[in-house]
Image 1: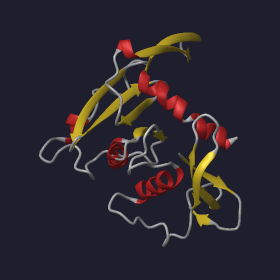
Image 2 (image 1 turned 135 degrees about the vertical axis):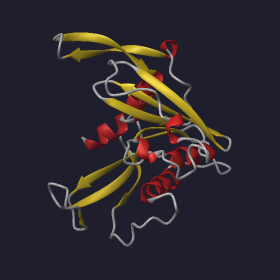
Image 3 (image 1 turned 90 degrees about the horizontal axis):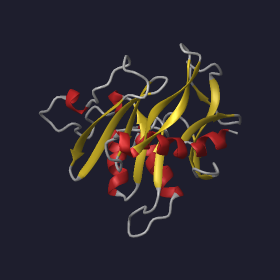
Length: 216
């Protein structure tokens, strides 16, 4: 799932963009080919106001999935949804699980801050933050879990060339046994080194392929 700038007649405005007046389209793409399953154009600000209390990006994802994937008995079975941190949130992960959809995305910690009461009321937010920092070695990882009703969510911090957080509603906590190693260039040593890659990072790389192909 991605947002993509494009040319055309319908314009939106963002003062922080190099090209301030541009088109914006949101697409749900098939992972291996990049073929759009459904997309919608960014419309006027009034038409893009969030219709739910979960935010505009949640609403966009919900519409794309509902229109782009087949449903049986109210569930989207047999599909994995991957998003980047512009879309990912705890409430989207919960909604996907409730609809039978596996969800995995990169995220920002402030997108997991309690709009679906995560972590549960009365507990410290820090208890759901993985014990990892930007100073940890490359290949380091840490995870923390929480539950929203019957839905268990996993938040994982992984240090590659930078610290990235992943949120998933179907992965187990990473261990050395459920990942693999990948070669990464070490600027200091001027050579490739092998670092650990959790299974969820490998899965995310597969899911984002559709976006990369769509960009081409």
